[in-house]
Length: 169
Image (cartoon, rainbow, N blue to C red):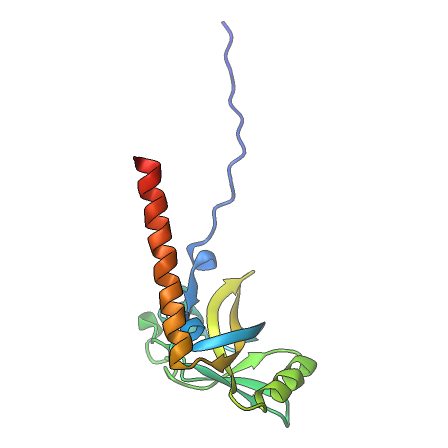
């Protein structure tokens, strides 16, 4: 009698917080994003727990650049309170410092000085256990550009529908 022993290598389980990405889709609709930069973010303990639960709103957020001393600051991003933190809660709408190199901050400061350029948060996620924010340098779109984006999105949707109908039948 021959017995077989099955030896398998299990895949490493991904932590749900590691794969959760909070995205600001409205920013890509409202702005032409020319450059992106991944920054770290200074957080308090209850904020980290709340972000892991996905209780973040990036839609109203913006980034300000300070030249002296060099710094990036994240404004108007709402991180909801973490219930079990009790009395050690954080302020929901507080200004948070972003972590980047001085030369990157100086480069962004020069670019933001141009008319119409702004910095907006695009995504917030965890990478190797650290919270990261992807910020984008954008120029505001006009109504015409927004209409063009809507028409392009709808045409792509129509094409994909036609392709699925063709495949089915």
